[in-house]
Length: 220
Image (cartoon, rainbow, N blue to C red; front, side, top):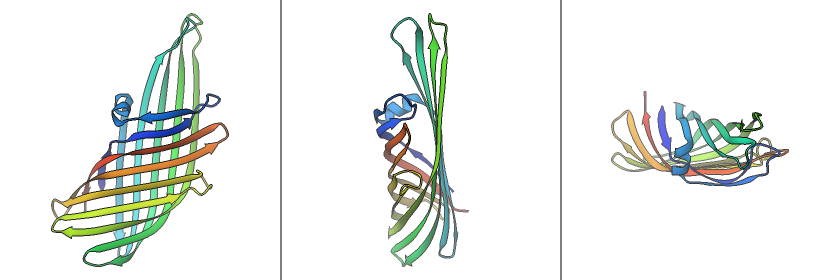
């Protein structure tokens, strides 16, 4: 079982409230943190002989707002919820005292939920608009573990998918330096990037989340 914190920046282009036009997104982690309401991130892995089943999930909610020009409306509030859940099955194709290589595939499920509130002014009119999109991407990927000696090790992993079945394209890459604190507890620090390009009519979400991550894995 792994709990982790991912300090994500966000870059890309998105139109999550049609018919509003697509907007460029360039948010550093400190910008995201100012507007973050909450986040939950965790993963779990079960290994049986050479087979592994991996589940990874994250949820976040961000709220931002501002004032509108003119007297008719007083301001707006925008709330965005993002849920990503990935399930993968991996098979260990190579294993020795230094290297361990797993390959496999699975599904990455996405749920984006956006709510726009335009607050009343002189017009005494409130406007609420919601937009939600859900899809699943097939993915294939690999994971490489490298023993460095003693309690230290490296891990590099990546996957690619979508292929037009859900999104046009999605990919992920991550790497970490790991320290085995004890037989059951391993501490990790590294970098992760996750990209998706999804389009459906006027809805588009073409973004990359990326940033450093720290994690703790407990083996039962």
